[in-house]
Length: 93
Image (cartoon, rainbow, N blue to C red; front, side, top):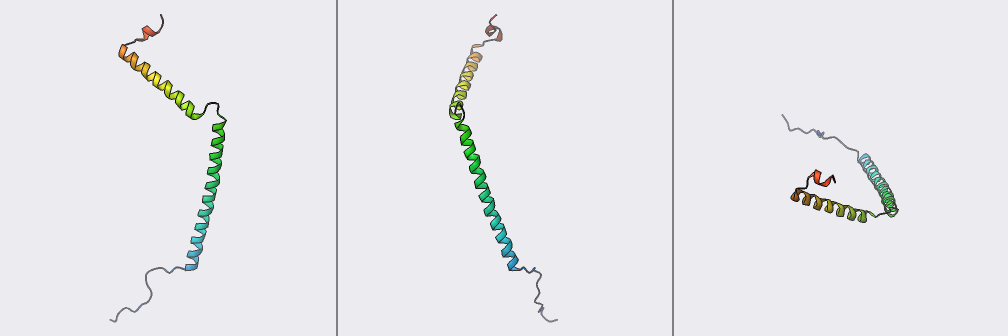
């Protein structure tokens, strides 16, 4: 038998024009998606800033108040646990 001189291969053939068009459309879609993401996130950021400015107590001050309350409650709880205060002693009867 002679050597195989068949020039066809088992690989598919691609049209470069269609591949370039498809890649261009994907790139254009990505650019549009990034522009939409930028517009949407800037709106959310500005709305959040406006909402925080309209608050009576800023979040940082509110966090400071809540931290002081939690620390005070933990200190009171630890003192009550160490001193053995029962519910009858604190009921005021």
